Image 1 (cartoon, rainbow, N blue to C red):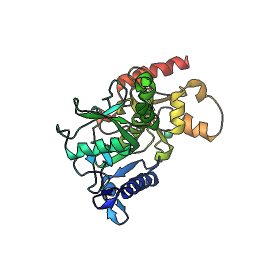
Image 2 (image 1 turned 90 degrees about the vertical axis):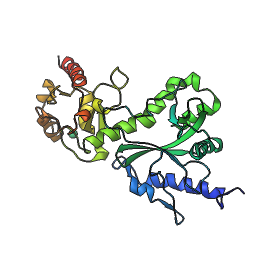
Image 3 (image 1 turned 180 degrees about the vertical axis):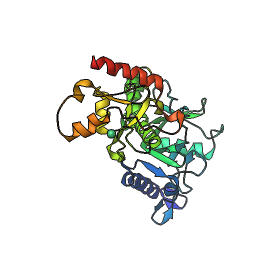
Image 4 (image 1 turned 135 degrees about the horizontal axis):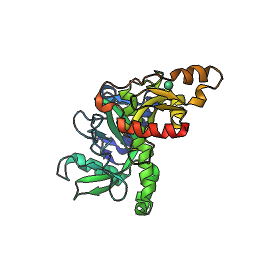
Length: 307
Ligand SMILES: [Zn+2]
């Protein structure tokens, strides 16, 4: 039996598993974010184990051998988050060392997580003090020259990394990063700046809301960033994607002419037709509002669908 800080190694495994379970039980589409205070006061078997560090990015509880979580601080809309775009040649994301000393205890704690193949939690602040928890993630490589670790954010990525076949599957690996990290963060960030309301109809149930791309994902300028997003309820999102409704560059909603003249039940009448001419409710912060150039390009697409 391995003893860690006076406790057996199983205790660390059980605590880690319980932390993941707690995160699952305390978040969903309606409430995707965690408050710092709740993360800091998590307890296991009567012992308080903060899941996140007060100041630092890497969290290793005193009783643990391997790190439990990593954290990325809040980046205001319009600015590039520090680690998200830092994919290496293998398509995996990177996480910087604590300081420049490879032997720093927190860097060692990440190396231990790598050696023991234990999963970690990646907290990213979507608002100051409120976090999205991407999990499980794994440390798959240590790059002392660049002072950074490589992270797998999906079990398939992790399997490829362990099999040494990542270089053959780079575009697949990048797609997984998109699904597991970029898209959930995009949704959380967009919903946050729109206060979890549909920009068109004000529906205020996060579980019924999406972050709609203005410029489609995969096209140039189609990045999952707040200025390319609109918070929309599921029906308005689908109608926007299918050019049933359009949004003018001055943020006024237009309903396609043929749809405007259709006669049908209340969803069409109140949900769609009555939105014609409505003005979007946009975030107060300029940097969080939709980019007018993107709106314009997308509106042109809508216009050609009408013709
Ligand atoms: Zn709506």
